[in-house]
Image 1: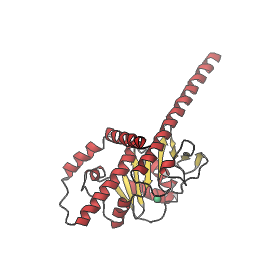
Image 2: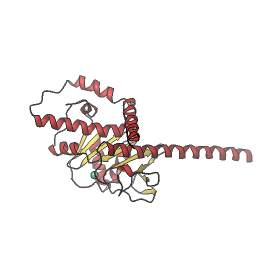
Image 3: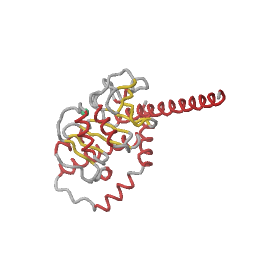
Image 4: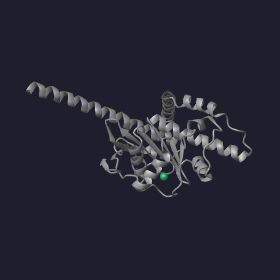
Length: 252
Ligand SMILES: [Zn+2]
């Protein structure tokens, strides 16, 4: 019995160490993701947030804190939050829009990372009431995968409003919050970060095309779906996220 207890004690200590290492590496990725997002122009003062679901406890997620920029996330100020939006670890102030994250994590078990930002061109496109067209390759990533939330310009400060955003997302990749910002999801941090940047790029090209006037027709559905499948490969997100991380490290 004594021997058995000691062996199981050792294995639970090992499991605990493994869990701490995983959490540490996820937090490091969140820190880098915040810096990449700011380098790519996704900042709006201290607004905007990023979260990641804990792989060993899907009912909890790590999230950036209030009152800091996306590029000021540290190991110390990341909060751990449950699916009701309650802080279970950490002392920093919580974003009032936490419900965007908690309600999407509840509705979408496949989603592990959620980003909310206020990027200029995506907001401008949302204000037109028109959807994203495939006028450029980034548009294909969101082909039939971009929802629209039109209930309010205000912050998403309740469970009900968060659930509304989750409904607008449906099975899609992202949501345009009308006259407010974007919510982009991914299975990984790399996927959500690259998706956020590509959505803004697709919106920018579309607004340029529409401003120029008289756009030529988009390519066929089959042609767009082929590109969508190619650029949705996990490797594509990882390669491009890793590149952006190397770039911010070079600039330090
Ligand atoms: Zn917002």
